[in-house]
Length: 201
Image (tube, rainbow, N blue to C red; front, side):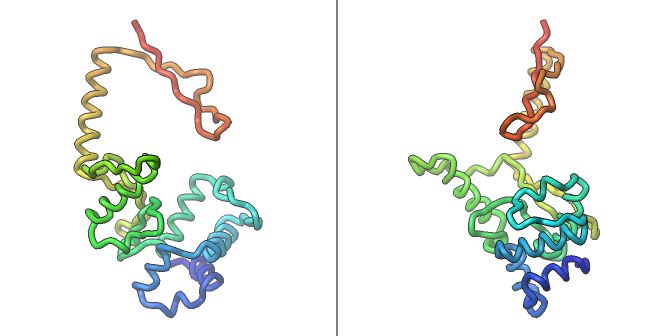
C-alpha cells in the first residue's frame, strides 16, 4: 500500500490499521460515503494536484485515462480482497463479494438483482441460465495491476456463436463501413454518436 493511501485512510478512519485483515477487507468493500470522499479527495490532490471542491461530483471527468488507471491501481490494496486484491467493479446493492461463499451463489443473487430492475411492474424473475455478459474486475497479477473480465461458460458459448453468426452475415451481405455525420461526437446525453454502416449492392 502506497504512502498516499495510508495517509488518506488515516485522515478518514485512523482505526483501520488496528483492525485484522478480515475487518479491513470488509471495510474496503463498503467504505462509508463520507470517508470514501476524504480518501478520494486526498489521492486526487497528492497524485494529480487536483483539488476537489465540496459539491464537485464529476471530478473523475477531469482526469485523463492514464490518471484514472493510476487512481484505480493505487486504491486497489484498500478496496480489493485476498492476496491479489480482487475487486468486483459492479453494483450489488447492499451486498458485497464477501457476502457469498461461491461465485454460483453470487451469480444467482446478481441475476435476481438485475431482474428486479428489468420488469418492476410484474416483479417476474426469469430463470437464471448463466449470465451472458462479462463482469468487470480489477486485480493484481504478479504484483502488476490489471483490468480483468470474468465470463461464464454460457457467455463464452454465446460469444463464440455470435462471432460465427457475424462472419456468416458478412459473407451473405457484404458491406463497407461509412462514418456518419455524428461519428465520434457526443450527443446531448453525453454518449457518443452512433456509427453508421452502409450496405453495398
